[in-house]
Image 1 (cartoon, helix red, strand yellow):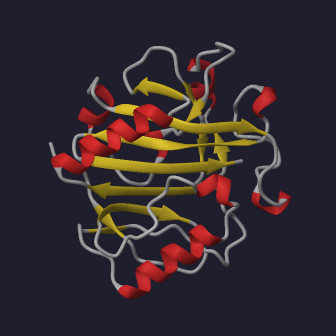
Image 2 (cartoon, rainbow, N blue to C red):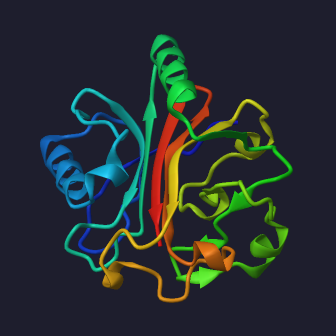
Length: 205
């Protein structure tokens, strides 16, 4: 089964989704750099700096002039050697390493499309004190294949996750995203590896 692959169509204040796999053009490169530059450096450390020569599979973010900056979702297609090197780097830097098939995960039970908490996902979350939140990949507007969720080799590297306010209040969820109350506000960032895809993510609430 093939993953649905996306390129980017930057639209004013909305998430960008299109079908196709391609190298970015100059306008798309500038838009990516502009968006990355709006975040505090600590939040976007680890995202690709130079993307001109990269093959993008997903570009999901809020256009910088929009009010909300809740997430950056970017996926690159890498060759076998690149993916192997990246995994070694991630293994050394990650705060936590999970597998998508783990029974104890704290998934952010929130849908950014309609700004609603998904109560059923919230109830299923693991309550272990030292677990760190990860994105709810099922709610991304890209349709991940079923294989992604059943493949024990789909590995989640959490590079950082902290509680607190890291953006202006206008860019934060007023009542949280369905996580335990100590995580009313915060962020999580990392990289998920699925086959030859490196899926970079930042979520801030």
